[in-house]
Length: 170
Figure 1 (tube, helix red, strand yellow):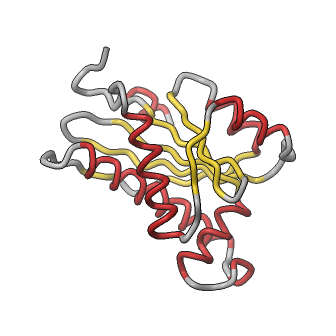
Figure 2 (cartoon, one colour; figure 1 turned 90 degrees about the horizontal axis):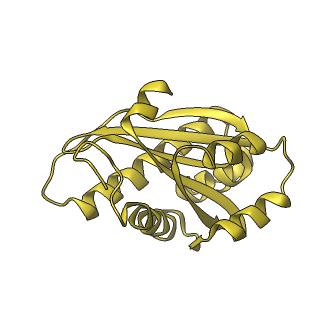
């Protein structure tokens, strides 16, 4: 059961996935699809455990609060940033790629909240972006957060809804 202060409601994660797919298609010119845990797990098995990933979180407050977290390989983030900016990914600096990871989380969170709570007002905090290895990202996704996998360019991207108590600890 969901409380008024919790981002968790029955279809919240599925709706978050739909928002990520729309952002990918409408803003990044990329085909994306939600996938089940088995497919995400299979995609992770084919990735190097030390591969650099970026994890971006956007906290929000309003009628309920929490954060949306987006985690993806840095190389995929660079490709998406290049498509978004209309430049070659190789021309982007690491800081620009990290900034884009934050913007991606911001776009997904904003679209999700706008479509699921049209008449309610939310405040979004500035994105927080960290770098982690693929093994750490998968461990975090299986911890105490609700996570969903998205496949983009045959590469996994993880979305999570994080409860307010976990946001305060991050």
